[in-house]
Length: 291
Ligand SMILES: [Zn+2]
Image (cartoon, rainbow, N blue to C red):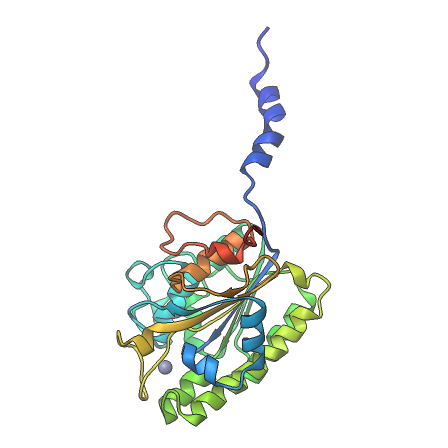
């Protein structure tokens, strides 16, 4: 007697599901971008929360952004996992008639997988990355990081967040006005760090804080009063990850900004699309075995 195919399928389904289910190291991912923050700026500034997360977590201070080291192209790669030529965001201003990034972002894939997604940003042009249908929350409360952080912190204190993207613009603004690595620039990083403290207080007050992966990074660096070139000062960005599964310590593996999108998805157990150029940074997803 032949077994009905349907019954066979049902009998196999649970094992298959178990065998194929990707691991899920975390339930929540928070990506915080400090616009224009150079790694040496992060190190030199009075930034106790960034420095603490670096010590408690892992840090790649030699991470790099895409060749077009401008805000919108770089953030588009950070969140979509692909290079600029693939996502098409070659401009760096808000244009109401230019639509959205032409590829899905990590937030799109996470949202499709049933996770909540949110963006709290200080620059209107980042709206181009907010693919319709990819977000539960889009918020641009104000230019200042205090207002952005307050809105994000309130959300993070009550929501069940999947991927939350937060953007502070002060370092970039001070870089353009006073020069990268000048005193006012370092003060702007310090100010952004205080805003980051507001966000982290909200995360760390939660009972499930151990299920959070927090990535603090930047879209680009800068030199003189500008960025957008292939100069190392423009291309190098910090990449700091904090979470219970992180292998602690500074590391020198080449991290690219596109890896942020891939890492965010892998952290939630969502398959990283083959179209991504970026790859998950494994050392923040599983602790190294103790010898
Ligand atoms: Zn800029």
